[in-house]
Image 1: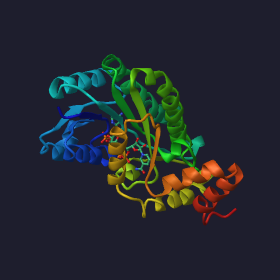
Image 2: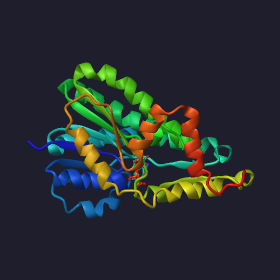
Image 3: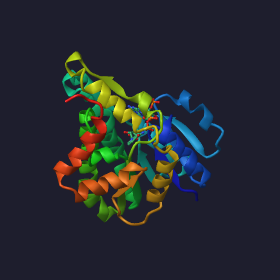
Length: 271
Ligand SMILES: NC(=O)c1ccc[n+]([C@@H]2O[C@H](COP(=O)([O-])OP(=O)(O)OC[C@H]3O[C@@H](n4cnc5c(N)ncnc54)[C@H](OP(=O)(O)O)[C@@H]3O)[C@@H](O)[C@H]2O)c1
């Protein structure tokens, strides 16, 4: 029987490319998305089933899981991928901005994870892969809320991996660096006049790092590696900058690492 992966946020970017990569490797794919009409070009693949799912809507999660199990006969891997970045000056971010960011990137992942656990626990087998970020282990300016969500995911999943191991449920975090996707367009940018000498320039310097970024296919391949990895390995950095920056963060004193970040991101900002 073919294996089945259940993906959230499969309408664009990493989720979409991962859906295509897995189906080409002979898997069944439940490609879930908020707006199934965005999945038109996935319809041509026989083993992709497009389903409606909003990570903030428990009912849609429950339904999509049930439909996938009925249609493909089971789920082997859940890929928590839906997410976006709230970027800018923290002071300019409203409670609503921040709530939506945490609802999507943190509580959304928890909602899907909670929903699949009874099924994986009963069959004593399952893999939960989450698109965290290298920004779940290091930080850059202007991404304070986004980092808050991805650091939360790293802590949540690291803790969870202990209690799920006795049930043979594997937890795996994918930690991409900058990747060329629609993510840049999906950024919600917020600032105010007080930060006019810092935020626009730092934001541009951050966006410039996407110019040489790899495409989402490198992440799809890493997800495939994680899905087929029988070990309990937790972390999978991927994309040009991620492995090197995570290594530097581990070996350098904090002050040195912060100086490197400031040199790159604060380039051109008058002190
Ligand atoms: N691109 C990068 O540089 C990068 C680096 C590190 C980590 N990541 C992470 O990678 C993941 C995917 O991002 P991407 O780069 O592929 O960006 P993307 O192309 O903008 O894809 C984001 C996906 O998340 C979906 N989504 C947003 N809110 C949702 C919700 N409430 N329920 C269900 N789906 C929702 C979007 O659906 P709609 O089409 O409905 O909006 C879209 O399919 C995110 O978790 C992001 O944090 C990206």
